[in-house]
Image (cartoon, rainbow, N blue to C red; front, side, top):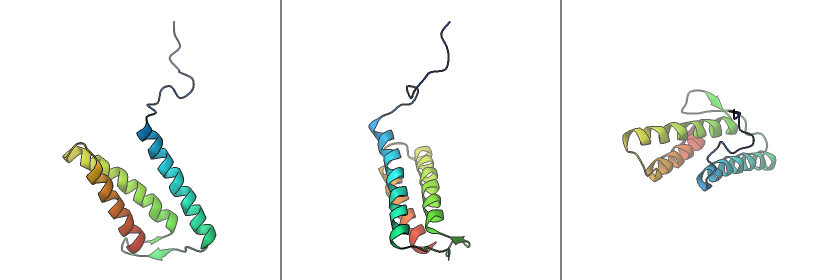
Length: 99
């Protein structure tokens, strides 16, 4: 009988798109760290969301929103996802600027 559990990362579909996705998230975290190191004290700001948010909060909300935007785009329009990506970038800019 063969064991069900696979070792390593063979169970994941590692494509260039998957690598790019994780690479962009790592890059965003590094850039946020450098931004905080270069200009410390990105204190909470009370913006259009009605709650106090820091830079990290706004990044998290932007990433979470991008996930939902892409899922909704797939539900209503299907592929390709370039429109969802553009909308997500616009939403991230709005969140960092006004939230």
